[in-house]
Image 1 (cartoon, helix red, strand yellow):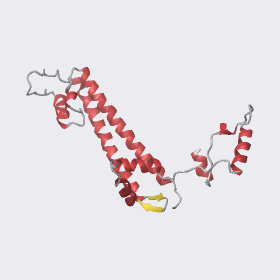
Image 2: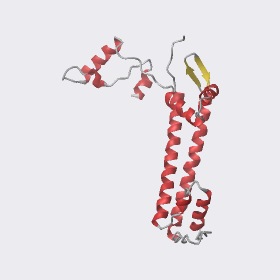
Image 3: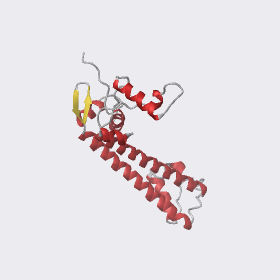
Image 4: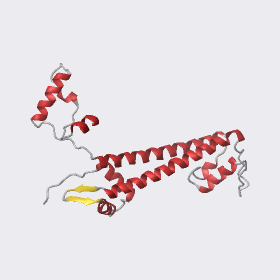
Length: 208
């Protein structure tokens, strides 16, 4: 329906056609007539439509979340692949985020075996030469999605600050809105941006 709404403009009321069903008989003509009459008589309230700026912000946040999910999935794949080879270095920390653990794995990719101060820990069997390119590709892909997620987050921040935000007493700048939201205990920049992305326009309250 977004394409039709964008073409027609105005202040539409978006409802489910099943709400217009009259009795057992149901056709497109009957639905159209019932919905039109209901709309003309004010039965349906006007639907809220996010602005292009709001849609852009939501799409940027959605893409950031997609990149984070991809990076997490690749991290888990690397860890599972190591476990299949009998390598359990992931127990010491994330195979992607923990610098020390990742260095050990990268050494194994180069054919080196990590040394442990604790002699009771058996040496890992290492990564077969034929699989080393697999881990290299996985790490490159992981780094790509992590970097992309950071870039999209920066774009989200820029978008929030470039917009004006509606309140019950008028519009305020993105900088002022972020200051207000982050002044609440436990609310940081990330949580504030998520709230703005999904809520967009807060409820209006009558002036007292």
